[in-house]
Length: 150
Image (cartoon, rainbow, N blue to C red; front, side, top):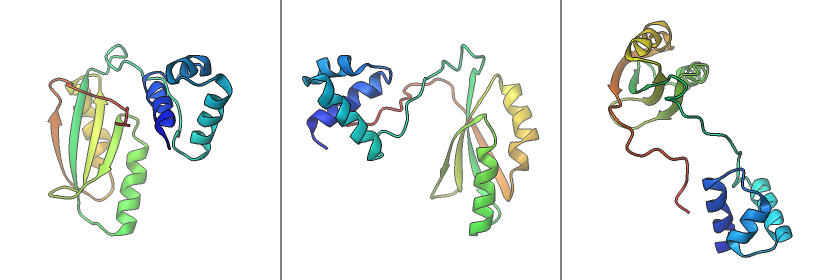
């Protein structure tokens, strides 16, 4: 990957809908070479998808919580079962397997603290092999990005 590929990726991270002509103008190459580079980056798995970012607050999802999860079992079947169950909860935006004093960190969105409490009671607390949950309320989002530092 050279500097032109990285420049193309920076443009696409800012605007996934940017046309090849716009990208060409920004990186200083003509249309066809830019198009070929984008296709190669997709085929090589560097570009894995394009999406539209929604404003969660305008959709009524005003609360972000982080839930630290401790499991009672850490064998492979238990981990697989837990991870499959988490994938089926749409309010869980991100799930990370962690080192340290807890096993997973979940980023969860909800319409309100009461909505999170209901989600906790109805879904999160019923996750398989769950031993403990510690929740932390996000007061203010300082930085959130999907853009990688390239």
